[in-house]
Length: 365
Image (tube, rainbow, N blue to C red; front, top):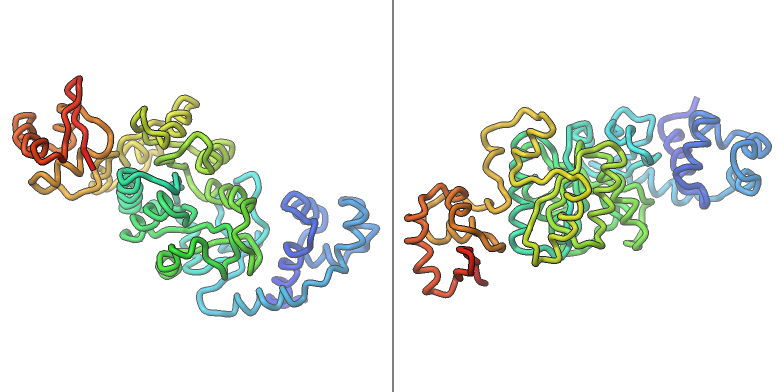
């Protein structure tokens, strides 16, 4: 009987053989069971379920060096290889359309069984978008929902940072090999995630950040979450791919609305028109998911990522980047309109706030 290391070697061989994609792997596993049986089958038996040319090549492809490197990598503390047959494989992925046959994981793999929510958005996010992503992630984490995202610059990184401040933790799904980090600017963040959560990849070790990897990465993000929150996204955005994949897998899709003048709001507005849930607070998400929430979850709103302390800086934090009417700002701040006007006047005189037609106030940068 094969040892655990030998069994993993067969799983690795199945993923490292060129021309064997996700669908072909599932067909082979369905026909033969475990990977060992696939590689012990005759070319004639294999050709009954796959192309004859692949059936001839499959048992003979040499990838022993890559297999040994992956097994040695998995022997290092904190590193794991998770197969479809592994108890630590995330159960939520099994209900998605295209679950990876094998995952490379760095960190605490037990947390892959926790309920998660995907938070994604633009790499070129606004300052308000970054605040929203971090605040929502922290509030959702305080409600014991782990946050899954893609470790990209912008919204992804902000969501990971917010989640790291909670006990729920965060999962970063990357589009490179687990031994490579991209972008380099998020290396420290990735190390922190590996210590308190999980860095996850389906790509073989050494895989560079190829453009085609990231849409495949997105399906894992979508599959891990109970739902997907899009914070900011342009009309042509990988975040919209993630949201579509989440919807196709039966997950809830949430979107934060923004200014009609902002290109980074258009993707969210399109999602809302297509049926995504418009959310203004983390509590909106928790209620839609029928999730038991804690009092802390009511804090994060689309404009609330600053502590509730008195003063002009507090008003600016609640005002955010989009124009806002006085009554709405009053509700956000918990101040009366008269108290707010007393704070807005010196901010206008200092050139930090402008009053626009229609009773709108706009923060200036």
